[in-house]
Image (tube, rainbow, N blue to C red; front, top):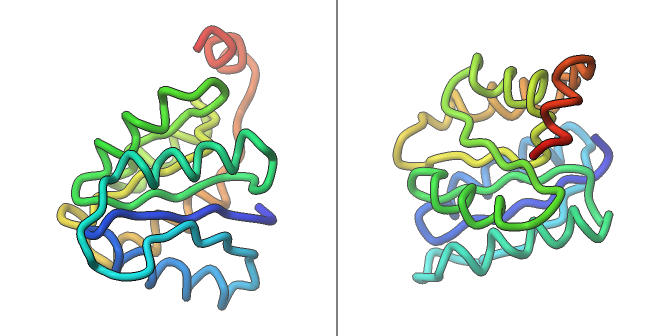
Length: 141
């Protein structure tokens, strides 16, 4: 992955910042679409920014962080060509890429340990789509 769009709501802000530092350390270009602090914001506004960034080909994939990951994923999935998956363990993260070709991972800051999140981000970024029978199904989405 060359460029990653990253965003959160107030609940996911601190974890977003940790992910950003990790990605920058790995020399991955990060497009931080906010927010800039922990002031209360509405998660749909930030999920839309990441989805639009991917659709406009400004980034290859996106990472969204809110309290559960669910609201962000639901919002992002309203956009054509977006396949956002709530990633909560290594298996769900790996399968989101292998079988569903997810282009956004959504994480729950209140449900996932910070130490696990970095591992999940690595899995997401390093897992390839298998294609084959999965491509036919993804195309139906």
